[in-house]
Image 1: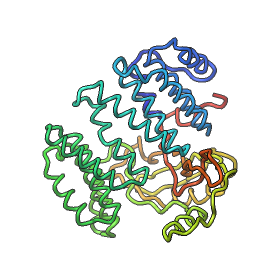
Image 2 (image 1 turned 180 degrees about the horizontal axis):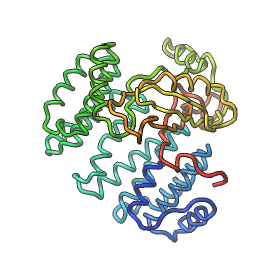
Image 3 (image 1 turned 60 degrees about the vertical axis):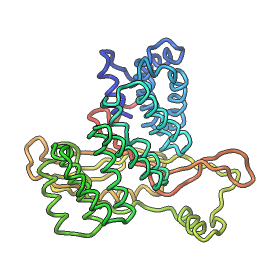
Image 4 (image 1 turned 90 degrees about the horizontal axis):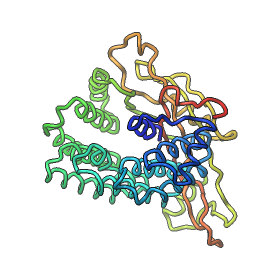
Length: 378
């Protein structure tokens, strides 16, 4: 969400303030006294603060109200309205409401497509958002169909950028599903396109090939590609490999039971409601690609899974930087918000949707200069 906020601030000379003044400013917007852009700036900023403090439900409430105020103003301020939808999608995903997540992504994409030219950078950047959504929801066949449709339409219209983005997503998905030969063939074809020679895409394609090599256990190819990526790398560190995240015994037991059409080993009762847990993890990515000094910066009260997260971060490997100057001699410091996945279900014996644990974790990069950790009391 922070990236959205910074983007919106850049579009206006008015800078969103923090603390009590921000609350007051956003309250004016809640009363309908703001333009859509100003509403998006103030509401996303305040929701960002609530989210960082672990107040996911309150953040969702702010964004849902902003969507209600601005959903009919897409023609007036499409980027601002789309940014509210995107922030809502991010918070909903961490809070566990997959229905709200799906609606927010759809709202974001529709707002941009309906109100901006097809070759606008915002429209092109959002082209694969629906496919990404299906991946998050575990519907891989739908994701592949979506990416393929986007790629074919973009090629037919001469839109090289969204075609390449969708094509790389298809390669990644095929590799993740164990279709190594198919993924490699698609990647070979992508590398023949003229846009593949642009520096950003050249690096991105190398990262995709590297991750295929990691899955195949090809040490020689991993070493070769990691060196090439390190030479190209000018932005955030590129993750090469990471250990699995810790699992939940109860969730895994239920998944195993469902595989064999058995009843849940740990059933969800009508009174169950999972509390939201989270941690912010800070760590260094050193120039050689190793991580160091991983620590919990803050989080919800004593989550039992937090030590296992630190081990996961400590085991990651990023692409090494081949040249190191004084400005990056220590490496890159990163901060990530890590939230266990949740989902909403209607338990047996109840008619009320409730948040319950699901398998895995949601990860959000919070790294952004001073804004990564807000001042105390704000």
